[in-house]
View 1 (tube, rainbow, N blue to C red):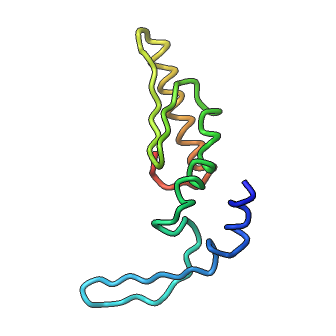
View 2: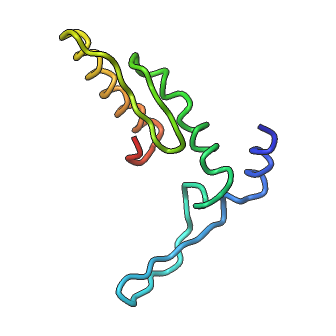
Length: 104
C-alpha cells in the first residue's frame, strides 16, 4: 500500500490535461478530473481498490477481474428473483454514491 501512496503523492493522477480532435478540429486543453492514466501499471490495482466494497451492498455472489464485475446467483424461486432485483437496485445506488461511470 505504501507504493500506491507514493505513486499518488508524486502527482501522477493530478495536473493532467487532454484535448479531442474530431474531423480536423482540435478542442482546447482541459484538465482531467478523474481516472487513471491509460496503460499505467497501477491502473487495474487502483480500480480494484476503488470497487472493493461492492460486495457489501449485495447478497449475490460476485466475480471481479480487472475492470469487469459480474454478479450472479441461482434462481429457483420468486424470492430469489426479488433478491437479485434488489441487488441490481443496490448496485445502481452504490454506483451513484461512488460517482462511477457505467463499467458495471
